[in-house]
Length: 49
Image: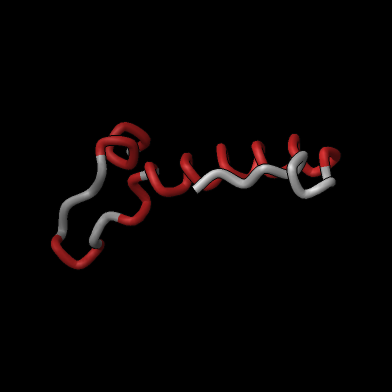
């Protein structure tokens, strides 16, 4: 689904909504949602130890 702020008469919201969409994609792709109960750590965590 794409929100079209210009069609709704709110063009000033377009940059904010685009930033929110990028942030949401990045959070969904992040590996911090790994299951902590299985004893394995993500590669990012292992590289910091």
